Length: 221
Image (cartoon, rainbow, N blue to C red; front, side):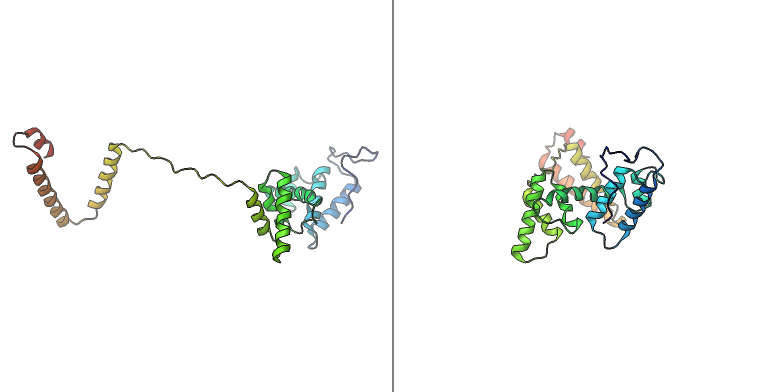
């Protein structure tokens, strides 16, 4: 692993001026070493995260790129969300190192991002490690995700929304459905349907309307 120049918060004489756009030869050499190590296939994901943190903290990108995000996107071909997630996972891994060995893969840590409480993260990861040891299963991010689910409160299912429909709404829907059905009928079928409906109307009038109820009968025609 490449040795950093010096702690970023150091106040010692000779500390680089990170606000100056021009970099010193030492900084340029450090950046060259960092990029070479970052591209190495054998580089650990934690090493890559530490390199990114140091580049961002020292602004070692400042001579060629306007921002850290631009440097990651164009030089490293990493989007902002991927970089942010990598750095967050590295911070969690640093905390986990107090109780277990450092996680070998980033995806072993990624499920812990769903937990805000660091103590719950440690418990979930330790439970996943213990489960793998107990069952003989390989340690995977899936085991960690399962341990995370066990610690998260169950999501409350919201009841389906209540739809209140008036009689006018129902009549509109019925009319629309009838119209769609009528569009599929042939002309002779429409004629037969008209005859059936006329007979139904006449039958209903005979059974429910008295002879002197002319107003009701007229309303049905």
